[in-house]
Amino acid sequence: MEFEVSYQLDNEQQFWDELDDIVSTQCQTHGLIDDTLRSYFAFFTNYKGDYLHTEYDIARCAFKLLESPLFSTHKDYVRRQIVFSLLEEDSPDTLHLIVALLLFDGRDNEATFEMMNEEGIFPRLVELIHGQKDDGVGLHRMLLELLYEMSRIQRLRVQDLILIEDDFVHYLFQIIEGLSDDVNDPYHYPVIRVLVSSKPDFPFPQKDRTLSDSLIKLILNEQYMVSAHDPSPSQPPTSSLTNKVIKTLSTHGHLYKTFGENIILLLNRETETSPQLLILKLLYLLFTHPPTYEYFYTNDLRVLLDIIARNLLDLPPSATPLRHTYLRVLYPLLAHTQLKHPPHYKRDEVVRLLRTMTSVGAHFGMVDETTVRLVGRCERVGWLQGGDDDDDGGEGGQGKEKVAKKFLGVDMAARMASSLSVVEVTTQKERPGVLTGSRGREEMEKEEEEEKEEPESFGRGGDARDEDGAGGGSGNGNGLDVGEATLSQDKSPFEVEGEG
Image (cartoon, rainbow, N blue to C red; front, side):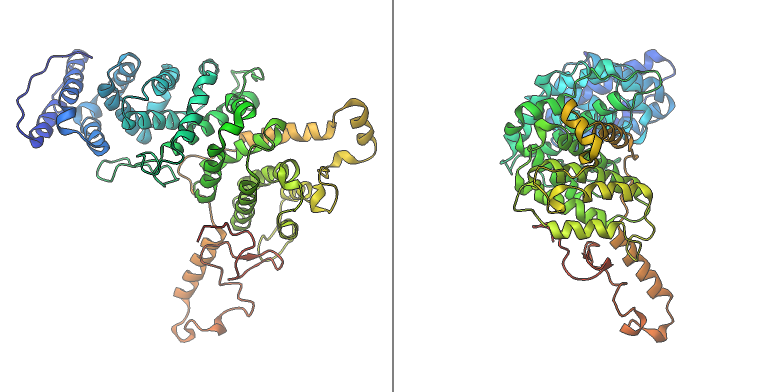
């Protein structure tokens, strides 16, 4: 993007004043808009090294245009020109600003991400991520974020997914492994949630690069699942489309163990529903695909079991779809992974948890039929019943089905259940930004409201509570005694080590 522009600047304030003048230009024709945009990008590129040293500065430059009359008056045209610039531009400095503009605008206006998809931007982003790794961490991280944000709000085109090469997926896994021990790397920041800051008045989110790469693989996995099991009306199912994420972990999983640790850490701390579903979808595929049954370390599986059990206990009644997804992941976790081998980790606690989930009582209230069915499948896992370690306890071990399995080499009922489950898991969705409810948090909020409404003469004494203390849940909402199905202040048997 070449455009001659000459300014004499003595200090940083002059830079910002001149930038304001450029984006304030009155433009009545597309030709004038194009000239102004060229001036804007050229001015940024010429002085980036002198006055723009942080990601906050890049964001500030982007919002100078996004909040200008030029953009608000000619929004659609300016957006499209910026999208076209991403397809054509090669200068890392100019690309940095273009990507920032699309990322911040798209977070406020999903139409921007939809326009990018329509114009075939996905393959270009993959190309830039793979090719711009040596042009600064800021640009590379922002490219990852843009790819993630664009992909998580819409279906990607099958023709774009087909273009993803094995080398690209391996490259993302290798980034995680390469940074796993470097705590001083600017990407290795211990923030797990995706922080979204739509205005530069707030600190620019400094994200963990390993997190960004993990999120990319999670969103790619979902896109593969959607294409195969939940196609759009205009698109037939594409069973021939290989899921490159699962393929890579099937053949090289022993090289990429850090990714597994990362997604367990993500699930442990995530409070937003959408990322939880992304993680659960990947876990479901890993635990139902024989080559990846034992991808995780045994200790990590134990931590994962604790997290899933804790979250199941803490989900409010309104979170039924998410509860079903957790249960669909729990079954293959118990039946197919190293957890089925002795010593059986927290067997008694798991049995009590499952029994509690189908008991109508103070904790779960009315239980829907799907929950009863999914819990029943988990309860039939062999080692929970004291059976053989390799017996998954499914319904396929009875009578005629057992004979069919012997002679045909397949378990038809299990195949049918698996097919239905993967569709159910695939179709679970939630809009970005929606937080998952917490039974413990809701209990405390309700209790606080009741205390505010109590007559002052009652105070906050013990007489105002039930004798069993059911109104006083633990501070983190996870202190459940699964044997009694009531909230208590005792430590949960599924509390994750290292988490306060």
